[in-house]
Amino acid sequence: MKKIWMLMLLLFLLLPAAALGEAQDITKQCVFSYAPGSKDKKTMQDQSYLTYYTGKYLEITAPEHAPCYGLYISFAGREQPYAVEKMNENGTWSPVFVDDRCYANSYVPLDGLQRFRIVPKRDKTISIAEIRLLGEGDIPSWVQDWKPFEGKADLMVLSAHGDDELLFFGGVIPYYAGEMQKNVIVCYLTDQTSCRRNELLDGLWLCGVRSYPSMGVFKDIKNDSLGDSYGFWGKAPIVEYITSLVRKYQPDVMVTHDIRGEYGHGAHRVCADVSMQVFSQAADAGYRPDLGEAWQIKKLYLHLYKENELIMDWRKPLASFDGRTAFDIAEAAFACHKSQKSNGLIVQDWGQYANNRFGLYATTVGPDVEKNDLFENIAE
Image (cartoon, rainbow, N blue to C red):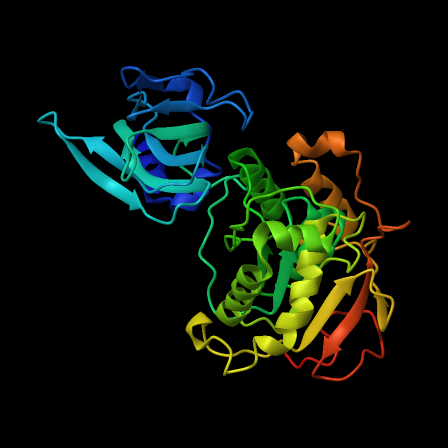
């Protein structure tokens, strides 16, 4: 009998890490120590991005029987570089992880640490909206382990704000990023509040996006006309910005807003208007070579554009989402935008804002014939 137990123990020790199963959330078992003068200490586990802890550091002690193997943070305020430091036996701190990417949501793998702290690397304080600590095992699917975008893009989605990419483009992202495994970059025109940045990341993760999106730089303001929006931002800076995105990510296909701005929003109109100009301008090597190497988009689609119309079917079951449809996923992702529920808009592939209707504004590969795929005429 003793030999059998010894054999079982040996087999257990030799099991690969994957056999441990999904890592458990040990947050409530951990002890938090806060920096003197810090604010809102109890807000990091209330499932709200509107509340957050701010302090010079945040120290965490995991129980001896359940050391920490993963740290998941949703930051508040402006994204900032930070470090995770461990406590040494002599009482000093040393870094085990430094992140300069400035992502709003960040996952840090840890090697079974029991005592460590999170510190800012640039600012005097760090602001954390939500935090989760994980034990040993596989990373749960809800943890957003974002990666930088690599290679060239198959598809660029240009959205004025967080949530527009779901309301007005519907199943584009879940279908092409999640189901078809295209290299999709989602770009936003306007700067977002920290709450809206975290919400849009939650939505994109559900849609199957794993490359961190390009966050906008233009202050959000509600204008109902194209002229007023250009008057506020200036047209040239936006043309330069979108041109630089196209040249950086080199998309074959680009999708953006309705010329009329769907319900008339000026920022939506700007996305469409500038994209029509950039289609040819980004390919002009003589225009602002400092913005990157010239790149020709092959196809530009505008939402609700009446010419060369394409109507997508978002209601087909998708294998990558266990039979749910692209429409289902878009609805679930939009539900992540809790701060926008008062606007009265819903995800719909019908009516005046139908998110499955697009028009091919410009193409270098010929017109669509089948009209059931944004990538028609584009070779694999």
